[in-house]
Image (cartoon, rainbow, N blue to C red):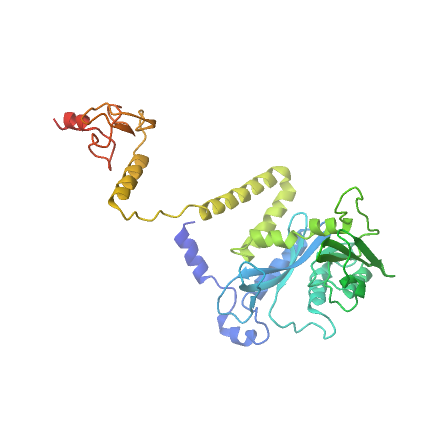
Length: 372
């Protein structure tokens, strides 16, 4: 398909009935693509059985269009965009569930925090199956971990210090690399690790039966920290790989995951190689040097023209530029030294004996013999 044909299709492609849009927008701001999104999520759930570890996080589609649910996130590289809540598998980064953030959650109960509501809604199809969910401190509370334990689902993640259910010892200072932990009756463990002098990391886990660390190491990092770092990358990886086109890219990424499972290692290597090549190409384009500024003096301009002419000359069997400066062999000068050679005779030629420096490096004798 040609580029212009693709652009025309994208321009006129629509997913809803414009005549009834005004009435549907009153109840659902996402109505223009709601049916397609729901069908995509339904197929994603039906086509794949995930492994044990899942990740919940937010995703931002960069956009500054005129939209009622454009969100501002200062900690993202693209500050404005359409925010979505995504559930993905850690191992394959397959997108399992998701829904957009439309500023107000009408279905959320009044006594439930937004993070708790998001986790429950995303993980609901996977209740009572022994899955483990990893989330950051926006979502996690002790109440959420206890509710998931009742659904036979465990939780790993960081937790904010200002949660009212946490003990006051969390805010106290400790020695560097010290670890303290608390465990309640329902099996939830709170770990406080002093990672820096003025900073501690608070983690909540209902997945680990015991907290351990290697005493031979200086930092003595608990096993819960290793597990969190290992299982937190699911949505972030999907976000980086599908940043430009989001919905279409997520669908294509999930399709590749399903294809990999059928054909195993060979297609997986090819798929990874294609991604790495695209990343290298994009980084090479961004790292290309800018065009040099035009020299102001005539001498510097002549030097620039001479360098550009020698660089753009077509390749030949004889070198037009020598690495070392040699005496001019044309001898229409006072034996000047030069690094240029004539394209026709191959003799070392200085700037005075060159006939057409800008077009091609040819000495005056070769030019005179050809003109005769």
